Amino acid sequence: MTKRVAWALFDSETGDYTKAINKFFPEQVEVYGVGMSHYGKSSTHYLNFNLADFSELFTGESIGKRLLKNLPKPDIILASPPCESWSHMTGLNNGNIHWKRYASKLFPENKVFQLQDQDVESAYFGKPTLNRVYTRINGELCHQNTWAIIKEANPGFFMVENPENYSWDYIQKYVPGGVPKMHLNKVVYSAYDPQKFSPKREIFASNIPLHLKQTFVQKNGNSIKSSCDTNGFIGKNYSTRSQIPELLIKEVVEKALKHLEEQK
Image (tube, rainbow, N blue to C red; front, side, top):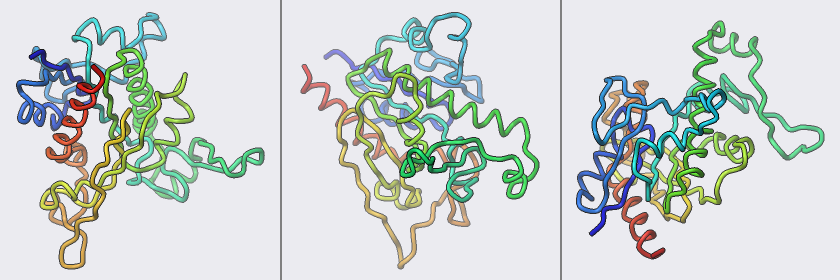
């Protein structure tokens, strides 16, 4: 049986996609992790690659074409681009530390993105820094490149994970050339592993409906506390916040493989 090829974009820290696929689908899927590893890891199945790269501006070669030169063409793409540009962790009224949304006079029902005012940033989060700018730009580039890669590689199945916040408004309005038709599948992490994950609400955007679990698992009338943090909140460590329940990944890949078989 010919193995399917999967690209796991931004799978550089906890390696959740790679670990789950190798655990549950070792005979069915050949997975390649892609991202910038803090540990400098590199192997035949992990490509240390900057997914926020914008050298296409100078070279004319797209990020998708460069990945296709280094990796076999994917049947499946799973991606978790960083969400800091739209994170609720630095939330302000109708926006966050980087962006605010407002209704224009021409389209009063349409929320338009605008950079946050520096005096507002300073009042809530201290003096603006260059790192704050880098964080915002990194998030935007990673999202733009994710969709550019998907359009270039044209896999039979794709799934992009991000929190249920207004990053999805940005993606659908501002990605050049638009994004492929997709289903914004809602999911709650604690429905898959209540002992380890809080009732974190996420969107798994994919080219097929996934019908994922959305039950808010509760204990003694209170939301389940994450074992990753003794205070019961999502950890501030990036790796901890980025973790995905392995049974959730298993369900997604099962549905991806079923879809690919049906498309033969």
